[in-house]
Image (cartoon, rainbow, N blue to C red; front, side, top):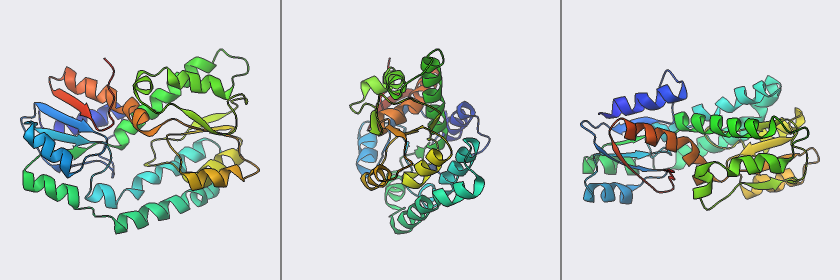
Length: 276
């Protein structure tokens, strides 16, 4: 199998018809049989893969190149997610603007060539798959919560948390979902899984959801400064942070299992949890 085919499998699983800006094949590979798969890959993991005779390294997070410098294109997806949840378009665009500016500035500063050039020097095939697997992740979270609360007359935030904790990847991880804002005993109300948009939308996006009548926002993770801003905002509802590595694995593990079904030997590492 080659890297093009592996990428196509991910796109098909996510229902995408093109490779998104945050995913790419950095060093093409053919006749792939052994794969090392990690959420974050740097030069050390590439050297490990070479030493252990792997044919390909797959990262989840963008390791460099245009997947890093054009990451903002994927963050813009959050605008449509907000609109679908009832946020007016002009409010959605304003809400994501601070996060977009931050992503663009960070991309301008970061060393986008470090890992990719190391892979080229080592002649180690390298690719990363980000948005397609985050789409799978978001879908699985939505399905788990819907299944758990659909028959409950007045579901609480804790019911959604309990449903997510039953996902096997979250059981394997060390960071369980937490109610970062609000209370587990609060009514769940209208809820959104705000994922598959590159990164979390910060306080601005959460505020936009709350102002549009969403009671519970579910992020994969949230920074301290964003949380403090939301804690001081009178219109805030509930915010659940699901835990970064284990949540990423919710989207990655079905892809790993599919690659194994295709005959590849895939070794998870660097934050990837794949249940049996």
